[in-house]
Picture 1: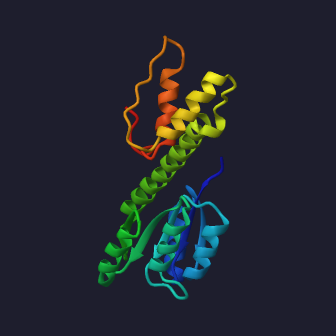
Picture 2: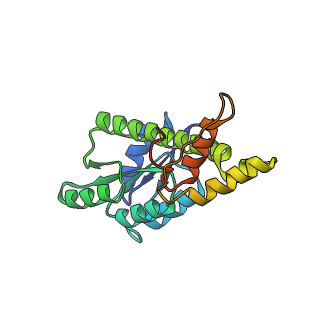
Amino acid sequence: MGMRRLLVADDELWVRELLFELFRDEYEVHQAEDGETAWALLQEQAFAVALLDLRMPKLDGLEVLDRLAASGLSTVPLVITANKDVDSAVRAMKLGAYDYVIKPFDNAKLRILVKNASEKHLLQREVRSLRDVVRATYSFENVIAESLPMQRIMDLVRRVLDNDSTLLITGESGTGKEVMARIIHFNSNRRDKPFV
């Protein structure tokens, strides 16, 4: 796995150069001078973290953040702001920004913030990967029911999935009761709640 990608989007060249120098040893740093370029790059490549200035031409940081949130991309956004724009930074947090940094930067704090955001990105990817494994294991499409009794059980399960019925699964040890319970849980409208 290569270096993680970091996007730095700011219309001020000195800010982009400063951040490039600060992170070039740990990240593959890409730069954008406006929001439109930043958004295009975010769609083209997988970035772990995006540092987005709130005030940029073409698309401002909030607009990029709004598009990023709607896109389902896994990039973790951080916003860059001036002291006078802290209210906008709070709005950015509500739109899904991990955190915000105020110019002029405290380099040490900024490095920690980007590191934490990058670790959050890795955890999100791991969770997504684990969910894919669960989906492949427990979705109806992947359950093979060849025998007539098993086909009847699967038909019954499909009928009772989302009607708040209490189900009792009985059978001898080793017959797949827990697997069936997981299939029911995964395919129900409670799939995002804990399996207990």
